Length: 168
Image (cartoon, rainbow, N blue to C red; front, side, top):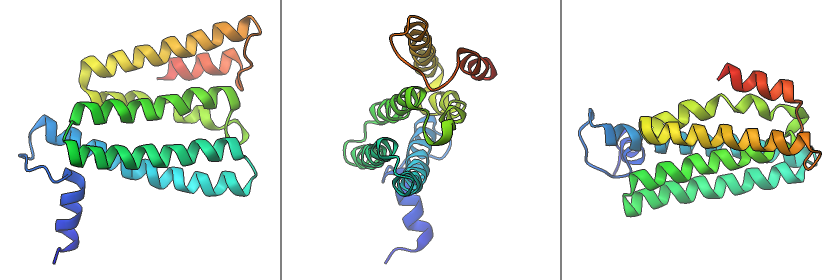
């Protein structure tokens, strides 16, 4: 029978038997921990958004729970650490961009943007983390450009988006 500590260690390492100071084991730790935290947060958002009749945001939350759970399971089964990190970052970036459009609950979703750079570097390393951050900034810039031509309607003003980007 497993002790709670052994169960936690097995979960957080995805069953890998790597030394603690290995960079890959750190990435596995962050992928699993971030996935667990994200699933718990998204489940709470799913409940709150459903109760508030914000069904679009609730459906995004439900999709996030499924993707995060599937990604953690795929990491355990296939042991593809880099792919799991990329899937996790994409799973965070796509809802962030959707939330720029719809605003989330009372337009508070912009406050989740600062989570992205830290997550990108922890999960992907310097090179791929910088690439992910560049793609995020370019996408936000593109959406802002589309809004300036009245092709999309963002939930936030250009000034709010600019200030949030500059604070990252």
